[in-house]
Every structure is written in C-alpha cells, then in structure tokens.
Length: 305
Image (cartoon, rainbow, N blue to C red; front, top):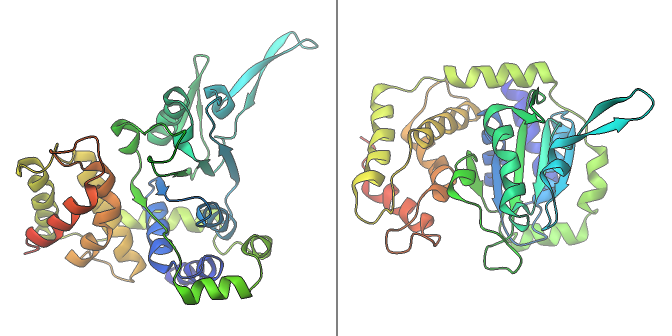
C-alpha cells in the first residue's frame, strides 16, 4: 500500500511542480477523511491539484464555481416536475461526487456556503425533507481568494472548522517555474494520468489510519498544545475538542505516509500549522488572521516532552 502511496505522491508532483510539502499535506488530509481548504491567489495551481488527485485516485469529480448568485439548489440538486409521470423527480447536484472542488467558495453568499455544512460533516444532505447519502469516499477541496480581494464573503468560524486543513500553495521556486515554462502545459498532462488506487484500496488505507499508534506521552503533547490555546492570553479562543481530534488524526496519517506505525512529535508539528492555523485568532485582533504567528508560538513554547 505504501508503495502505491509513494507512486501517488510522485505522480501528483509531476503535475504540480515544486510543491511536495503541500501535495503530501493534501494527501494526508484525504487519508484522514478530512476536507481541505486552499487559500491563495488565482493561478497558483489549486484547481490542477484537485483534478490530479481525482484522476490518480480514481474518484468521480465535480467542480462548483461559487459566485454571488449561486443558490443552495445549484449545489445540492432539486426536484423537477415530470408532466409525463405526474411526479417530481430529483436531479442530484454536483455535490454528489467523490471529490468536489468548491472553487472560490468565499465569493458566494453565506447562505450558499452553508449548503456545504451538512454534506461535509455528515456525509449526507437533506433536501425537501429527504435525507440522501453522499458517495463514499467523499472529499471536498475548497479554494478561496485572500479576503483582502474584492467581492469576497469571509467564511464564518463554523464553516472553517469543518475543514481538517487549510494550506497555501504560494509562488513556485525559480527552478520549478522554469520547468513549468519550458514543459508541456499542466492541463494537457492531466488526461494522461491513470488511476493508481482503486476504491477498495483507498478505503483500506483510510481504515488503517486510526490504527497508527499514539502513545500516552504523544497524546499528552497534543493536549498541552490545545490547553495552551485555552489558557494563554494572546488567544481569542481555544481549540475545540474537534480540533484536537483533527490534529491527532492528521498526525497519524502523516506518520503513515512516512512508513511508520506510530506517531512522533515531529508528525504533530508537521501538520499543526495546516490543522489549527485557520482555527486560531489573536485576542488583540479576533477578526484578523493571526493564526500563523500563534502556531509559531505553540511550536516554540510548548514542550514536546
């Protein structure tokens, strides 16, 4: 299984050049059964990453372009009256896919953003009083532009908390961008990708992640990190139990990708910025984005042993 995961990482890295840490984090998020938020400027490869993962993992794929006039029914689906049968027929929306790209999610209104909440948390949607299960696996990759850009609606904390991880791709290194300019267009390479895992293999790997051993000492380290956010004065609020579970789950998946059957503090530290950065705010600026500096404080001040 790990050989196949190495092949998956290699294949995606051939498409998204120079972004090995971010690709590993994205796969970690999927293996931990989480959802991923990518915040970056347009044109950084967010869509390409989602399409590459879908093709290599053999997942059905749908892209939802979030705009200010998007309605919840455009995401979830709607019932249409069939005059021939005299009944309403449900037409599923693009949410009924195994990997869903919610592109520029913060350009939609809060009402449309919230349409994703039940789907991401429960793996199902309730439409017109009927509960409909979503495919398994179900993985959302949402992208958003920096909130400083015009025409954006900031995601509320309740929505941000549904994402296991948030990361940024950033500008490529000079060598990677040169290879990008001299090579074939990345979009032209996507159709050539072949699935490297089938659904059964992916489900089997996801089932192995909770079995990666976390010692009492390791769990105590996670608890010290979480407790620091609840007691230190610079934090506007502390991390929730959901966040501590997310941190441990992501650390287990990161350890699994590193070919280990146990978690070490370095695994927790590797995923900490992506797992908790979007969940933290500075008390002096609770509406701002001070998560990055708070994460660095946690890494520096909270002892691992």
